Length: 201
Image (cartoon, rainbow, N blue to C red; front, side, top):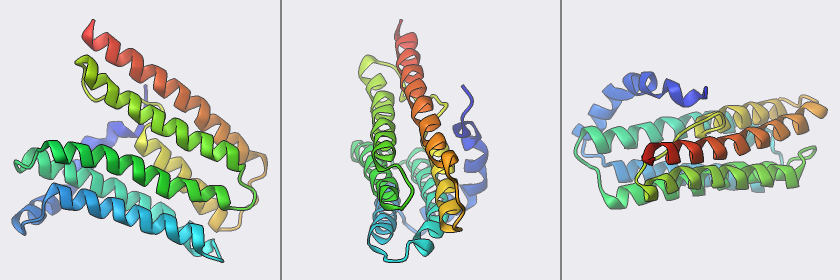
């Protein structure tokens, strides 16, 4: 099913010169992974603690884009520059889970946001990623099926943060958007489960 994840190969091609430069400078995939997680935590703490939420809300889309770039870079460093390791695989998955929670849960503190629904979306997003990982325990690949993968969530929640930061009155569209995300996440969990089972049958 369609997902922004399908654009990843083209995005990686754009980043490849930077990856080569980082590898030449001695940077490691694990360092990039930890930096991406630290950046996400810092952004989340800023949004959660700022008295005026405008600046951190407007910054969130940029941080999400940087996180996507860093996630792509750490994977390319690992695969293309001989840095694949078990520790790296663990840090990658753990970093994604921690970053998702740190970046998105503080949105529940924003006036007008349905906090329980937002938390349910974040929890279901973590379930979707866990489903993708569990496919490997069956002998399948790490599943990235959509329609609401990591990149898709970053796009939609980044757009939500931008709109809130600009002071737009979203009304029903705010809650409706979160409900749609929840429904698409349920479908994502189902698609990843079916995809993993289909691989091993």
